[in-house]
Image (cartoon, helix red, strand yellow):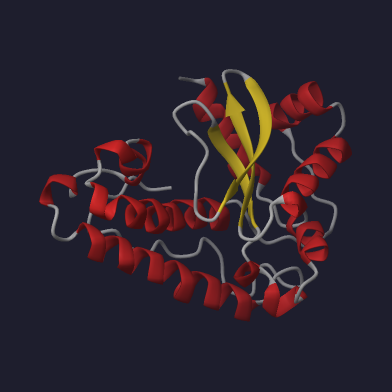
Length: 211
């Protein structure tokens, strides 16, 4: 994810709109990325425009220091900034897949084995978190001081990323899956595992381990 600052720009999808079919179709990706995410970008820029002291802040700097944001725009920055941050991570966490068999490799596979025992156990726990998130929100796999942890956040909130570094997240807002799966969140989550970009997850893990 690029380290942008105001005015924030919509990052293009790292694949074509039909790349995730049959798991997520192009209509869902089009509306999710070009409409929903674009709205978060536009609203974040509109919120920040009258505050030049915030224009050089990256998205992470804004979201990790919400107490420093003027009180009258703090909620708008949290909601819209979180919407941009979360969606960019989410879209970059997926790639084209031709099979339901999609497994981690490298250091991330070793970490999953260390902290969850088996990949299927990890899948079950992440799925439970995603299904257990009441209403809108996200389920995350995060890296925290050498260990892996599964957390969930409501709305567009993010984990405390100064310590819980995001590796992977599932968007469980209804607009992420309703065109494809209607109210079957369970089926959407199962499909998500088929399109996880484990190369990207491995890249994130390696970057955190090097620090």
